[in-house]
Length: 398
Image (tube, rainbow, N blue to C red; front, side):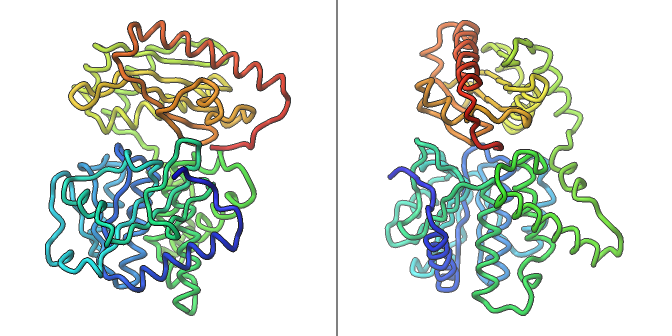
C-alpha cells in the first residue's frame, strides 16, 4: 500500500498513542533502517534505541556493517546505554527472542520494504505476522510503500524521521507522566534527534515550514541548555553540525577526486563518473565513504550552481548492477520539487525529499553513461525553465 501523509493532528496523535502502547506492552525491539544508512537513518536508530532504554525495554540495533567514523559517538552512546549492536550476519541473541509475544520491530527512515537493510534471521522475523511491525518515516513520495502494520505507521511529511521521533518522544513523556520533559529528553536522546534533523536539513537551511522550524528550534535549543547545565558554559549548536559534516583525510581525497570531474553547465552543475572511475573509487575508498561523499558532492554542486547539482556513478560492481544518480537542490532555489521532477522524467526506482532525491537505473539499460546523463541534464534544465515560467513556487526545503 502506498504511503500517504497523516492528514490530521488527531490521526497523527492516534498513531503515536498506538506505538506508545506497544512500547509499554512489549519487552524487546529490533531496530532496522534502510540500505546504505545516512545521517537521519543512523540517528533515528539511535534515538529510538535510547527512548526504548529509557522505558526499560531491550533494544537490538541492526546495521549492515560498521558505520562511518563520523557516527562513532552515536554508536558509543548506544553501547553505553545497553543497546545491543548487530552487524551483517549476526544473530539476535536467542534469550531475547524466545517469546514472540514480547517482540516488536521498528522500521525507520525507509521509503519501501525492498530498501530495508536485513540479514536472514531478522528477515524471518519481519515476515512473521505474529510480530508487531512499527514504522516511522518521513518519505511520502508516490513510490513509497508501507512496511509497518496498519495503525502503527507514523509516516508523515517532516524535515526528517528524527523530527517524527521527537514528536513521538514528546507524546511519550506526557503519557508516562514524568514531571519534566527533560526527564525524557536526556542529552543523548536530544543529540541523536538533533543529529538527524541537522543532517537532513543542513543545519536548518532546508526546513520548509513553521512546524519543521519549530521542532528544530526546540531540539537544538534544548540540547544547548542540557550542555550548558552540565558544562557550565555555552555550547554553540553549530558544533553538532561540524561533527556531522567533518571530513576525514580520506573523505577529502575522495571528494576532491569526484569534484575534479565537475562540469559547470547552468543551471545543473554535474559530475559523471564512468564504470572504471567508479570502480576505482569504490576499491580505494569503500562503499560507505562513496555513498556519503557523493551526497556531499551533490550538495556542493547545487550550492555552487545556485539551482541544482547532479552526481552520476556506477554502483559498487561487487554488490549491484546499477548506475546511481544523486540530484540536489540549492537552499536558495525552491521552485522545483525534485520528487515531482522524478515523476515527470518517468523515473520509478527512486525517491527522496523536495530538495534531494536519489534514483538508480540498471546499467544494462545504459549504453553510454555520458550520453544518458547529458540527455538527463537537458531534460532537467527544461523542467527548471518550465517551473520558473510557471511562477508557482513549490514549498522551500528538503
